[in-house]
Image (cartoon, rainbow, N blue to C red):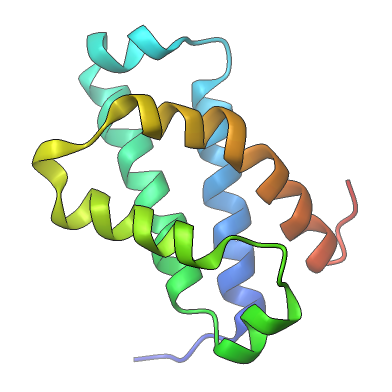
Length: 114
C-alpha cells in the first residue's frame, strides 16, 4: 500500500469537501429526504473527508490547530458505524455551514489562497 503524505490527505479533504458543497448548491435540506442518490453521495463525501482527516499525522494536525480534527473524524465514524441512524439535519449543516470555512482553511494551508 502506498503511503501518502499530509499534503495529499489535505488535498483529498479539500477536493471531497468542495464536491459535497457543489453537489448541495441550490438544494435544500428536504432534498436529502427526497433524493436517495443525493443522500448517498453526500454521506459518502463526508465519510471521505473524515477518513482523510483521520490519516493526517499528529504533527500535521498540530500545524493546523484551527481545523476541527476530532469532530471530522467523529462524524466519519458516526456515518460509517451508525449508518442506520444518520441525522440528516446534522449532515446538511455540516455540508452547508461547516465545510465552506474548512475549504478556506485547507486552501490556505495548501497555498491555494481563497
